[in-house]
Image (cartoon, rainbow, N blue to C red):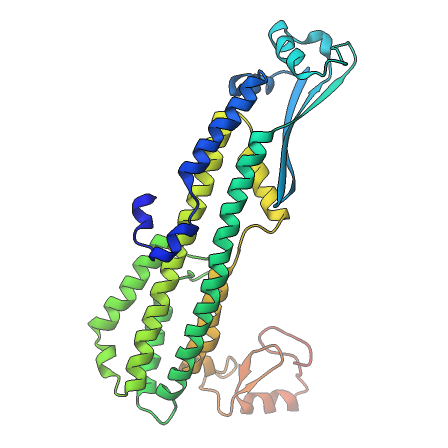
Length: 340
């Protein structure tokens, strides 16, 4: 992960999750558990014991995570001597093991420090997300202004841009044909394929105006930055998964599953940032240069003459809509939305 981090912009690196620091914190978590007589080996043996159960929970909020262990003893009389020795360390002095069902709650101070550190790292990454999102939107707006001039209907470059965006659509850099997000490696490979294809068919050389050449350079730069940002997210995600698995292995607890629920409830994961940016490229940039299939009438399969877009978003030629109206067919022929 450290080697991969060097390919990121230098000002992004401080926002990566510091795996080594968190790994050292796990050692303190294990020390705290063992000082109370709780080892990962002992915890694992409880899974098979019916008389005693251990539950690990993570409550609180992002500012103050509160991990704790709850040991429930349903049948104290059947507890083995080895387990009883451990429990005597955990039970308050005023309380003793009896034949009645018993519940012991243990708050984990060092574990709280570990999660506080991890949450701080994620909050730091969220700051970079916000900064880069604003910068990307600014770059996309600049590109939009350039492209409106470069690909205007009266310019010959419009047809070249149509080919460029058709090729871009085929590349599927950020989403596959089913709309699912691509992995970082796939995005990187598809971007390389796209730039190689541009060079192979000499589309960049066919652009005549300065505006078009500037716009293409900006377009390629934005996509390269988005792929890099995808790498940043991938590295942080990998580091988080690895450190939580390390926590599970060393402590015997279930930090991975508990933290996932905790983070979701506290809105700690920044989901959809790349999807949002890619959607912006599609709606603000790609849409400037309409493809012929965007105006295919789904009824007569011809280029829609005087295209009309219904409320549902589907486009038809005016001839087909007039015929449908005469036959009192008011619903969309594609999605069947009523009175579209």
